[in-house]
Picture 1 (cartoon, rainbow, N blue to C red):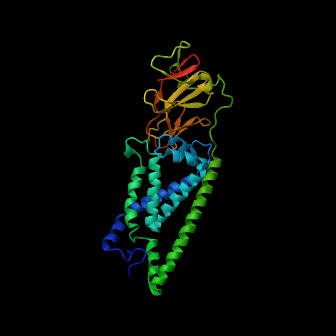
Picture 2 (picture 1 turned 135 degrees about the horizontal axis):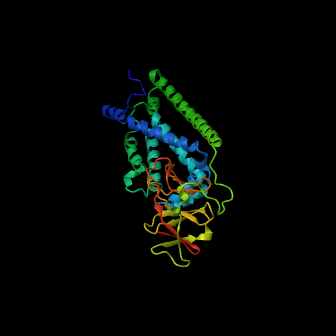
Picture 3 (picture 1 turned 135 degrees about the vertical axis):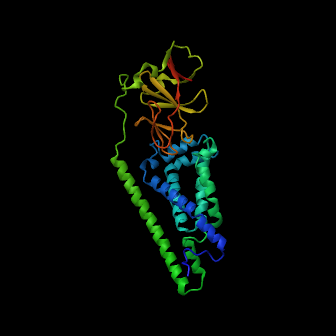
Length: 343
């Protein structure tokens, strides 16, 4: 007799059952990915810390201006940490349900909803569109919305046995189904809690790089950054440099701080960083991985991508970690009088 957790449902067919086995690798991939994404968020304290550039609130704030659902994103900023928690727990429920074949269609629908929300926010400005993973996840869930787990390695198959007359194999299957359901819920909760505690412990033990105290005009870094070619070009006071546009007043940006502006050449977001009394650097704020807008973190002097965790040096734009394949594009800057110009 075929075990109930590999037997197709009563309404199924041999073709549907075979489809379940064909889709099993994709089902495992989606389930594991969503569980991993959820646990990664739960184990990452900065994700829920509004002051961190890697927080869910920073991500929402960065994507709101370009998202087609920007007003809804801005409204959600009033409870950003709660939105992040709902996303993480939703991913966990979708992943566990998919792996166990527990309410598989509902789990797949939840996965589609999450992927669609990510597509409308963090992936909306990705160009070309197929560089963004969220649209792929959105479509990958569609067969499971239609057929669920198709009776293959599925808790739903256990639960379906409860509709049979009591006694014999049906009663045993129903009992096993209830035990599997409870075990899955308890195991997932324990795994999430353990991962979160471990992540917080590791984060607490890892020192965060800080900028040097003071930040006066005499602070200088060693290496090629001090070379005259890397300093802003001076121009006669009061005369805008040819072909350049004013970005900000010199006095409005403190040493070690940054200001967002639009690249005059492309209209895309960019960052101006003041690293000394008269030392400024400007870089494109468009991540070279998937086109998300990076944030600037003054304590670590890094640009942080809120979408996929890429980090860049704020001194020269080079990649420090994560998936970005190339550094941020540098933008030419110049000083004239009390203003900073860029081109």
